[in-house]
Image (cartoon, rainbow, N blue to C red):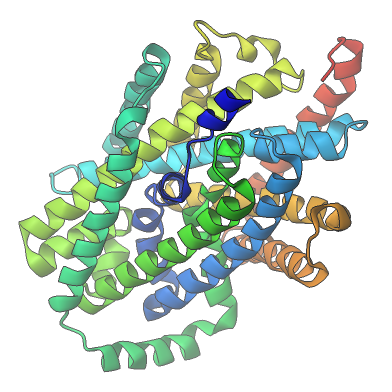
Length: 439
């Protein structure tokens, strides 16, 4: 009993680092240029709304996490809520892993975009894609050959990138050529031009920048006072990240011309900081982006590959994906990196962001529905859970509506991917009993 108590050594500070590190993984670097291109000066408003939706989504994760106390988190919640029905666990397994694959692609693409932003290759999309695949290869080798990967320096990287982002934000605000009054005036003009629909679409797209808070649930068996620290860590981390994202976006809008951010959307913050405050500003942003995406790639590959191996062991993925060597799921690690590389080759930044946001909106929606169904057991509020379901469902619909209006072929491709994933999950769920798998 004593040894178990000693093992519970994760306090609020460590849990905040896990949650913030999971969220600030390149998201703000990715969404800034895209958001400004769609709604201009209203970007901070959309980021704030996205944070509110993330907070609503987090409510069900907190309640389910404290009820089940299972470090398997999303997949485990479904598996344990519907133990006699194979399909829900199968489909959530496929969706969760695809979501992680899409975020891996986003992080690698963002790493590459910022790494080459100050070179003559800055606007060469193929160079950007090949470097993105290369950095995935580097972290694949780190995860395959090192049990700890970059774990020992993860906390340092998390707080270092936060300090860099805050410093850059303050410097941008100080060197801003646009006044606060002018910014508010521009917001009014953009509100009339963009409309509430576009603001909500961008808010939905920003959801991928908040993906990662659920990593706290994976540590539920290793934390001190989970009843208190789980909600504190997740909600406080979301508030901190919302604040950081809003400050960064305001600093960028004050110091960087909007057209410049739209033109250089893949590395908007670095290009703008360089023009506004010189090479030091640009280099700081590049360093922050590289730190953020490096820790995110390594951490995501580490955690999600192990989840993939567990799902495969349960019979919902091909069984070869569960193979381990010295407890390292080598096949799963390599497979995830390869699939992320395919996404990088076939899509641009906006498509990757849309895939990531829709996937995690859908997953969070499913978690909210599950929590609603067992709300008496999890002691959840009817109204908060219902509001979360409405907000997450609406966000998913808004992104698909945007695709329908602007690129219906791409929308069809996105829907087709999810249908294919559901069909494959159904096939595996049907074959599972026949193949003799048991939980």
